[in-house]
Image 1 (cartoon, rainbow, N blue to C red):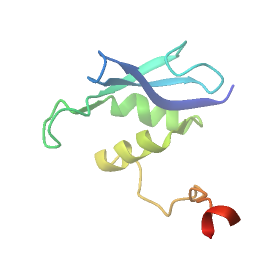
Image 2: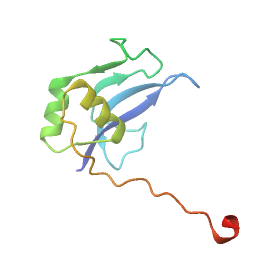
Image 3: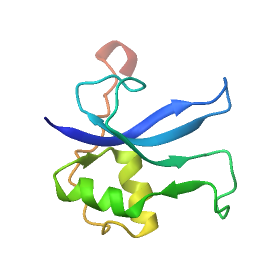
Length: 104
């Protein structure tokens, strides 16, 4: 079973609040999960202690058994010092060139 550490959205419309959770990669974003390992509240100030709460022991365990973090979770974990900031292995976003008719 391939596991991912990713965000699940909670909160009201235009008031996002996320759970950082470990889930099977095939399950939907807000669907079935294995374990909740933290929370993320993007509307709070960047220096607020409640903006990102992480269970470092459990995250370290899941990374050790092969769970892959999503892009945003990877950035949060790097900021918390749980993983090293390495060269990004992810491919850059593909930028479409304008079609012939639009270029004229």
